[in-house]
Image (cartoon, one colour):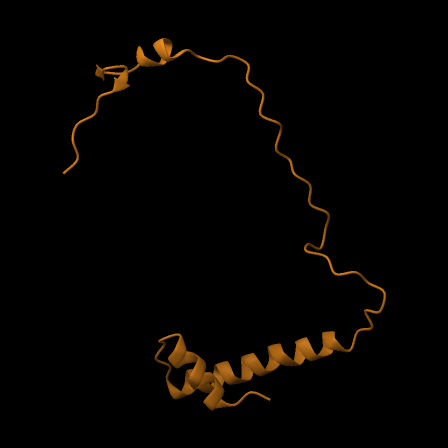
Length: 93
């Protein structure tokens, strides 16, 4: 199924340096994972629609409602420095 050369190739793409022992270990582990995937392919999914999540997901966000709208003058009172109706900030070099 998966060979040590496959693992070495993926490790090279991921810029990983693996020892021979790690390469053998990952070859077995990835092979086991692929066996589980093959088992899932044997399940009959005829008539089952694809879904993005295992459980229903709903938007829990509330609608934005303006309760109080501040005027520009009120907001400018918070400015430590103001110039021509704008916030004045230190120059960034």
